[in-house]
Length: 177
Image (cartoon, rainbow, N blue to C red; front, side, top):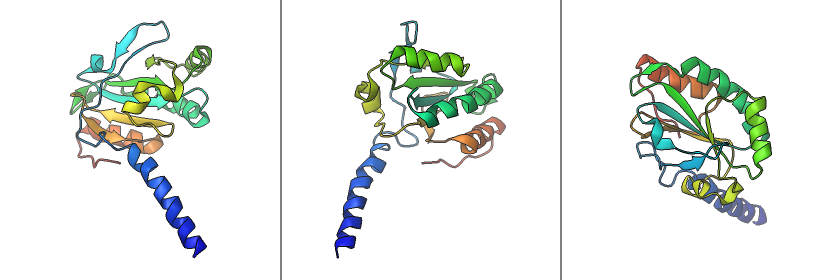
């Protein structure tokens, strides 16, 4: 009986965490706009990339899986940044860091050769953007089309590239997550 109660309690604790990264961020919804400063202090809005396929990449320098993924995203970005898609022209990555130390954030940008837009308010988990997007774990991403509509979430590695190539070729994609 104790085991059953433990399993039920564990299940009840995990459901809100799993569900929290979906509230208001369903496939087909408009992605909430983000307007944060880049490392130079210039605010850059997500909406500035209208007309392009955009991967909103939530990450942090203190997150080893996030840092590892940056090198994979460099390859993906260079491969598709000028591509023609069925629902957007060009591929952009809008990196949103949940760091709280600017030097650490900038260091990874330099070391990983990240040459796409990077923004952060350096408020760690207290960032209003983390709350808006219900971020519970990193890395996390949202893929939006040229109209700012969410078309996929939390795609990584081969799944992300597969989805992008389907958009590129004009093939049908099934929404993930």
